[in-house]
Amino acid sequence: MNILIVDDSKTILKTLKHSIESKLKLTVYTATSMKECADLILKHKGKFTLALLDYNLPDAQNGEIVPFIKKFNIPSILLTGSVLDKNNDVFKHNHLIDYIIKDGSNAIDYSVSVVQRFILNKDIEILVIDDSKTFAAKMQGLCLKYNLKVIVNYSAKDALQTIQERPNIKLILVDYMMPEMNGLEFTKELRKSYKKDEVAVIALSGTSEKEVVATFLKYGANDFLYKDFSDEEFFGRVNNNLEVLELFQDTQDKAKKDYLTGLFNRNYLFNVGEEIYQRAKSRKELLAVILIDINKFKIINDSYGHEVGDAAIQEISKVLLQYINKDSLIARLGADEYCILFKNRPYAEIHQTFQEIKEVVKATKFQLHDTKLHLTISVGANISYDDNLQEMISGAASALNKAKEENKIIINN
Image (tube, rainbow, N blue to C red; front, side):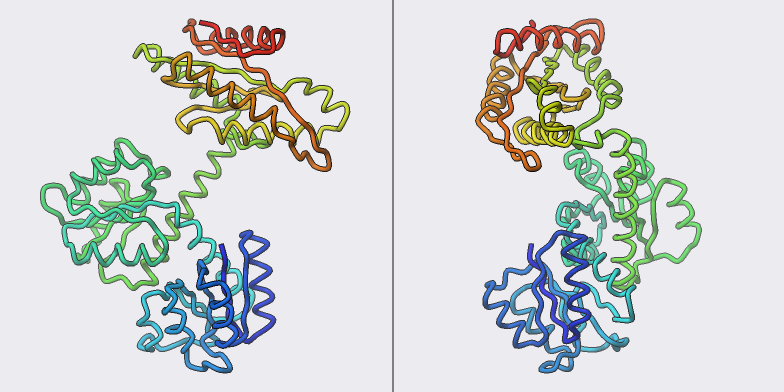
């Protein structure tokens, strides 16, 4: 992703460029005038994800850079040296998502945070629920302006179905007064299935009654907005709620993810895996437990050091994430051993999938720090239900030991 910054202050350019590139790992291009900006846009064929634009440039002293950038459909953030009148024509351009007053280091930090939020938003789904098509369209436009994916429902009952069908929805904007089911009733129903740290709800109302706000919060809303909100207030509330959700998610990930690989950890495997096991067994569904380890891993550690050994573990993790469907649970069981719960896959598909993974690993020369190595793995699986998940894993361990001896995939059935 390419970010464009246009500012006649070389200090601001240098600081912003360094902060964005180092913190967000994005590519930044800079210009000090509208002419330099035009040259960059021509060179890169207008392919910029976002632009940060100075209001006062040597060859564009009154924000002329803003309508110029609009021609190329590049979302923009305006940088100004002082507060601008809200009636300024520059704010009429709908590609302008925010404006920031350059008043010190805080402005730099805030600019970077807005860029980060804009980039993160591309993967976030928001649900708008309002029986007024006009107001729903207004909120949809604001969300799209901020790079969010938006689904619109005009009925709260329809919205409950939408949430079941689209599990990636993270934030819901719901109106209070609606026919059939109002926003309060919707929020109360939603909270039977989704906690506040899973899906955030911002309630909206045209009424100024304080009791409505209190009742919404009591029923499980995360936040509240009166419908006469400004664009800045809307973005602020949306951003704050998304950031809180991400903070919760980050905390939960640290508790259930392996620090080295990002895969699920051993505790999560046995806690959630047991639930998956019991559910699949009661429904008589297919469930496979697969164990994988890296061959001669001790030799790698002893010969090249633990940093190379850790890098090998990380590389095999990447291969597993690439070739195994997301509906499977992939965990690091310990050291170089991985455990996968593979649901609703027949024997032939299990064998084919992991044979392909074995061959990919064998054919790849991995760059492990300063060392290039060929790695191989062994695969053992168990598709026969035992009394619990631990016993099923033990069956897979027996298959893994046999797989090492015979140099082929072994599946106990």
